Image 1: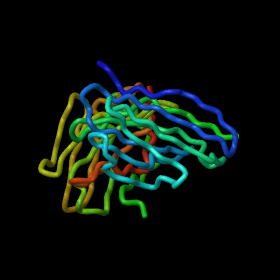
Image 2: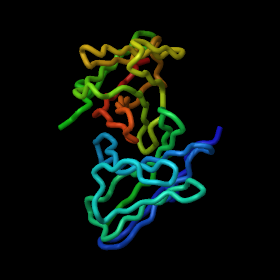
Image 3: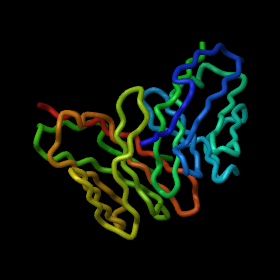
Length: 110
Length: 112
């Protein structure tokens, strides 16, 4: 079965640079969620989109923005990167209550 | 303020025995709960869910129990297998909120 696709899987950036993470949800899923997981921590909710509209917002820094496109894929844009942004970024999608996660993008900021 | 808590950071169980992972929550508005298994550097894998209208849901070796009055849920794995060794997260959601709050995770180790 098709799963959530995230790209890239690994990304290395320097401080103050910009990064764009992409998420392709499971076909016919209308909701996309972004989570950030730091080392040894639980996933922290960042933002979600339902039918291309922002539906909920969590602890997402102002330096980050996201959107969901007409084909339901989503992009998380991260600017002025800081060392503390180094983490695993997960995207999840759903059509009802269960969320299915992608493999994650490991972002390393040096 | 941790709304979803997993008070046992780790658990070791012998192969073939039952694993019981616990999760407590503070917000009575949560009405849907998910359990995930996670290996290092991989995305969480959905295991099983339960809505607040039920007190039990079963899927193969996995059973989730919900005690709404105690704001407590548990995941039972029977029989436990070495491949079950992973970090397990519970997550809780509220009606109308497009997000889930995750617990802190429990690392399960199943000993052969």
